[in-house]
Image (cartoon, rainbow, N blue to C red; front, side, top):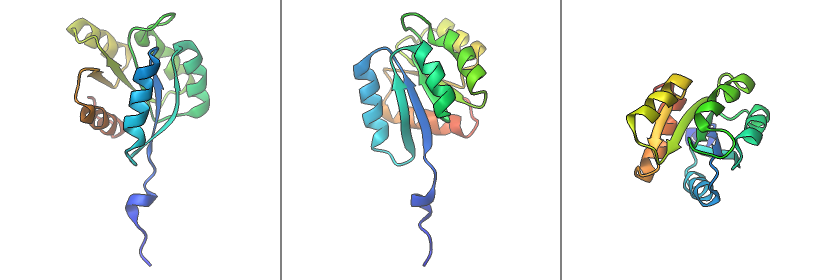
Length: 134
């Protein structure tokens, strides 16, 4: 009997970091409906998220820029210390060019506005997982 390749494909493992609980819940719900993705964890505190990311070893971290205690931009370096191969997609309400530049210079693999169409999130995650910038 032939194997169904769709069911044997390993989903992209995603960890969500955003200080707004409702935003994380929305992202989890959106990604949870798509078999290409598995949300392996989430946190509203970027400092505790770094330790969990080191343990969980997700493929991609979706990271907000503006959070209390530690900005998402500053968190990128800490994430890379605990999990060097992890991809990072910045997802934020900041759309200014300076924020994009800062995030990319800090090592983000992708940048997406929270005002984007929900389909953009899955497109960004797929692109980044394949090594493409988004």
